[in-house]
Picture 1 (cartoon, helix red, strand yellow):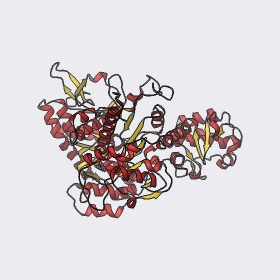
Picture 2 (cartoon, one colour):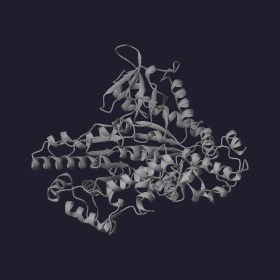
Picture 3 (tube, helix red, strand yellow):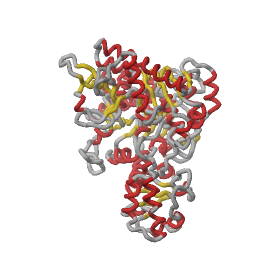
Picture 4 (cartoon, helix red, strand yellow):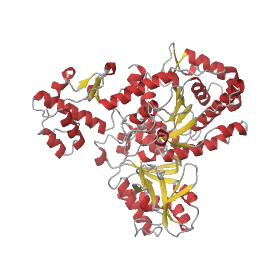
Length: 626
């Protein structure tokens, strides 16, 4: 049968075939065979991280996109022409979600993912339609203090705009590229929230304290957010007692919701909601559709939600592209209602109507704030210019930068000579932290030094992937006498956690170093906790982990390094690869603060930046009526 042949050739996964057989048992007639293929396609799309199967995009002649026909498939048109007649499919209307598949706007969903998408859209629309009550005169005074620096004529202080919007709305998205000041903005926003609460308490003689929580998708991102907010707080021109009230300890979304062991569900949900007044979620581009739906369902109606992230980064590892869909709008980056603009002008004395589109009616677009000025990269910065060119799919701009010999950028091929140099350069870049290991310096200083450089890969396997390069760099470090890897765990070995362990408070993406404990003389794995303090574990207690001389670009999200090298596989390995896209390249580039080195064939780089991530989803349509 065709299904067994697809399995044999590994074109589909066992779970795809198993699910299809469960939904369409027997499948003897041409009608049933056609439906069986359609169900297989829905499962395959979910495996590709798509929330649904977009029926408008199906290639009837090659629905599995395998390049050439390897087996004779059923006639898919049979199923497509009679979707309304199948008992396993409904339209999801009137809360009719008792069928395993849902058809909506010519998209076919697994029931669970339709519920995630439709419930999340409803929660976001309701939250964005709800405004906060603000004393404009009082807030205007605080804006003058927090945003005292003058803005050049003709420019807009977009950070100020974002703070004003977030004060006015119960839902706000603050998005922008690296260095645009998302954390600085949200710290000022939290200061305004504290000042508002204190003013409210003094008026009502109430001592009620608002509950503010900061969360991220990973422990590593939580530690970075905590550190960034502490730094931003120290620069605020306000009284120390107000600064003290601004929260700066972030945790993970999983920990906020409360994990149930051996379950995908959480302690907090729509029937057992969280107790908090303001929620800030950072690195939202990493948050998948199911997680965002569960988070929003667990929030009280009055909770203000602020999402932070870069909409141009890679989408989440799992299904959906939530931040991209929320920011999709009506196809315009900046469009605000006249009512919102009037309120912002009254609060901030800024007229931005000439810098955006104006609509007569409020919409979710009122809640989207785009920070546009990078404070990390100036207009002449090579890294900033390269990131912008890649984001625009501007191959000519990239070629121009390659020819300019910009100090902060380097471009190399991946010939055997280049590959050898890449491995040697990476080993040399890791030498400073290994010297500190030999000198038995403090674990936190060693980890900080290790995190100054990282080699990023687009793929996991092969010589140009994480597995091959981790092995190659380790061998080079042995050759030059910097490590001794005769044991599985050796002094100086860097590792990355790949599985959450809530009991140990270790999370996917956490980076640690194997070091000798000075008290016991035994090897331990040392990590930095979100509070900035070192913590250690015996290696045999660690959850699943891998060496991390090299990591994937996906794993690097939420991190920054002084220097980054990134390698792309050769052309013969990426011809049909739809994962290596401009979003992946952009994300890799923007991990670097001062130096970015790319190892890639020119043709592969050109193909990659001209290819965008396309996630099938109906969320933007549900949010904006498309």
